[in-house]
Image (cartoon, rainbow, N blue to C red; front, side, top):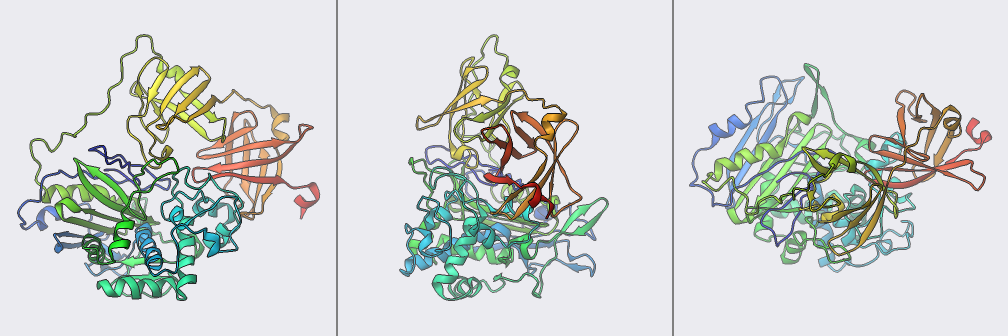
Length: 567
């Protein structure tokens, strides 16, 4: 099992997973045999965390088996300046693990009859723009709403706006609701607002009275103002050279909406509550029900929970990362096992990797433990196939979204996506879907020509991609793009200037960090995951550009007049 959002298909023994941009690397592998007879695991678990040395941040970990906590260990420091150690009672920021609690709160209100799963969310938030499509609570909970992720907008604004305000200003969607899956923190920002408005109380109070207190999660709270003093809270850090630096997201860096604070032991209480359906049958089942797209395709995401399998055993999990905090929470129903790790050591800590080793301790490796139920799909040997000639950058004719093909050990691979199986000289197939890449689609690519691809989905829908055309603008061509461009949705202004072989983009609030965009297609420039495509009027004059990144599509920036630019 990998991270952060896996492929789930009930017809397969092995589930695939996805990775966020946002950058949470998790790898789990659990044998399907039942847990071994319980025995003292502390020495072995201590070895898993032997990387934590004196004077550095670390982790707390807890494991339960059949509802009984059998491991509770802590390593490293919660506060480096004061030499305060992490203990089993240390509180951490759980980051995106909060989503399952937000979804549970929403479902409780649906069960109360105060909300409807299928109602247009503008019923609850009328100030949200009318996108011309009905967006439901279920779209928000399953990341199928198409609402742009505020984390891809915030950097443009200098964090001058909170996540809710920024989301409410968006006048466009990434896609029509229910047509695709795309992780959107904005959806859960809206859900929290809906919970507060509908319940007549704050999100933190609602969660406390309806979830945390009834379940006995005494060390867990939703904290709206992260600057409040919290006893036993670990500070978060990131490695900086030979030392460490504080790394915590507060205020608008965190969206201005607060965070879930908890301990590994409390998170195991929540996992056990889902095992025994303590939140109620409707809430428990709906939380774990696979989402579906409009075309009926089943996804590997439910409502705040990731659905995965390994060796025909179910795994229900989610990870979370906020600055230097890392959380990983997983439940394996067939084995009655749960594991929770919470760390404050930034990228140094990889919770999923530790969880894999911990599971190996509790589930003995058998002679077949390393064999998958289904062998990886094999490519057909095609004489004379030049895979390198297939590589390059392509753009969807329908949406303009990029698709980059590369070569990985002699096989065609999609950047940020799967290695493809060769079928014929001009046909390739994705053998295993991934939720965050084409929404779990096991598609087929057909090279109609060297410069044109047809992508056929599992359901038979065809999308055409054309190869990017070589574009080498001269100095005068680049000058035509120079100027200031603004966008009302983000309140951002880009200052663009010609560079040696491309364009320099500078966000007006940040004078020190320009982005060097290179030409990749006619009037199109790219910097890492960001793409801008310029628009021209009927006279050929540059008037605007569309900005996209992995979680935001086609935000239009309009060129300011000379007078406006001087203001």
